[in-house]
Length: 256
Image (cartoon, rainbow, N blue to C red; front, top):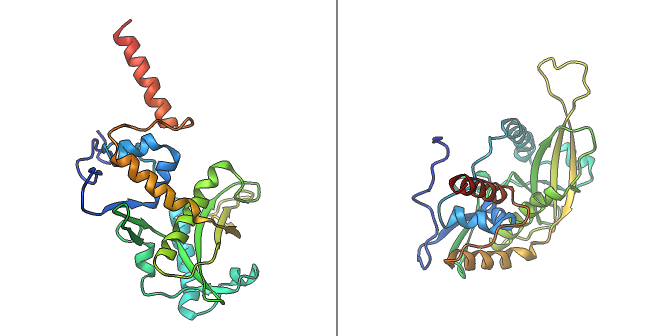
């Protein structure tokens, strides 16, 4: 068994009726929305979906963008890209910024007393508008010929991600703009040679968030975790389809 995938997990699983706060990350909330059964198997029974390989190149782009915007944050000025797109804001300088960025250990947090959930999410960046509103910012990286946008069906996860962060900041008492921004780096593939360099076109895409779904979703998660009945799988869940196909195949071979 891979050392990176040990199942069933012995600790960190939800226990019905437990009094201690239960940590629930933004990514696990998204897992619930994608497939309630996969979420239940993970958070209740300790059997998470197999992890994907890390996108190390995307992570490198994220880190470089953070460093780039941090230069202007320390100087107290707007980044040139913000000026280019007419965004009246500057990178926020805040004592908790590094904590907010630490998705594994800290992040932006909120204790939800109705459920006992300790909700967390690690941001890429946050700006502050000239009107004093926080602006949630997320970095994305890709490499494709067509113009980057947010129109694909699968990108709903990006939008929910931003809305969840907006909700967390509001729960922490901040005034938050409905408009967030995706700083999208698109790798160029039309160069004559590599020469040890990968160049990017960087575009800022605005998105108007609506976090109205968050509270209701959290309550649904609570009900699912408290139940002894496993929820139905999502119709389009590849993991559940795979598990079902394997089970049927094994059953047939056992009973030819």
